[in-house]
Length: 155
Ligand SMILES: [Fe+2]
Image (tube, rainbow, N blue to C red; front, side, top):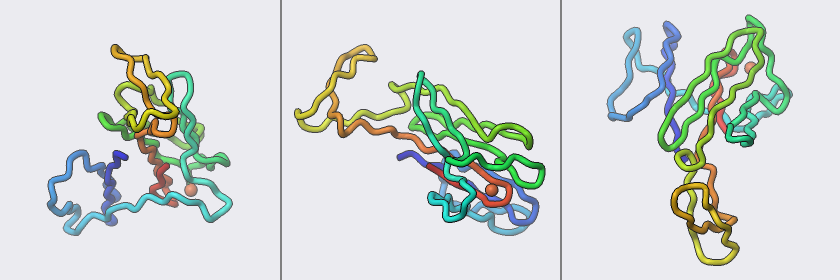
């Protein structure tokens, strides 16, 4: 699963996505930036975990399973898709719906793992037709969202 690290400066609010890891320490306003931990489970009634549907060649994301507020004081700032070969980020504003759509390319964005010869299904969308196990077709992407009050979440 391809993932990306996000960091925030607790002084000025700068936020960065680490597009390539070098190993050094990220510093802003004279101090170490905070590595944001992405939450994956909602304990409260308010739902933040991105709700993801794949259909019609698109990855459709809604925050969350119950629609998150989009007021000036409390809203989803962005939704990001990370796949094997790309990062896409959609900015949102108060008053908008907490949703984003991304073009989904099965050839590039999803890894098909072939294992065994039982339960094989044809996969002929590309140039060559190979066979993949039904159980082993992996959707290899991560969806992140950032709430201005409740931080980073992923699915
Ligand atoms: Fe929130």
